[in-house]
Image (cartoon, rainbow, N blue to C red):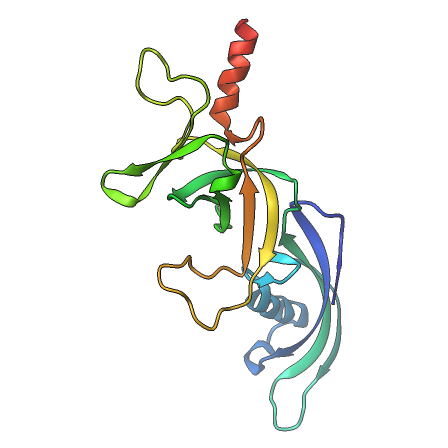
Length: 217
């Protein structure tokens, strides 16, 4: 069971968990042994409705330590706090582009890679330009205003050269599928869907340029 703190990008979650300490951990101090085992169990794992476990923050209590007949392991109940990543809907986050195809953008935070911006949540109107060397990859272009008269290169391109600001549209948790359809995305237990279809969202350079123009005028 868990008790969450105030919702934010990273937060502390209080967990109570019954765990088994394997015999090879019993030669360590109890707190150290428990923390190592908790990190093995929880770090980089997704807990549904809770988020991605980043770190064991502290251990509040350890109860029990029973060794059952025929089992060399110790069983105890631990109350501890985890640092958990789970943004809330509507939150603004800055990420980097990982890849893009005709269906969506995929963004990364460096420690979390399953952030998708689907076509209908990109700035409108947008169009996809395929890579000549790889038809499955390419770049998205926001067709806002006219192209620079001095160049045919579009102005509002999403190509990964700078950071991308997006708004969290939804956070979903998926069960492991019995069958993985061919050419489907890799399974991800936690997926963030984002939107860049609003003022101030998208590559940060778009809006830095707009601010410079306003200041000059």
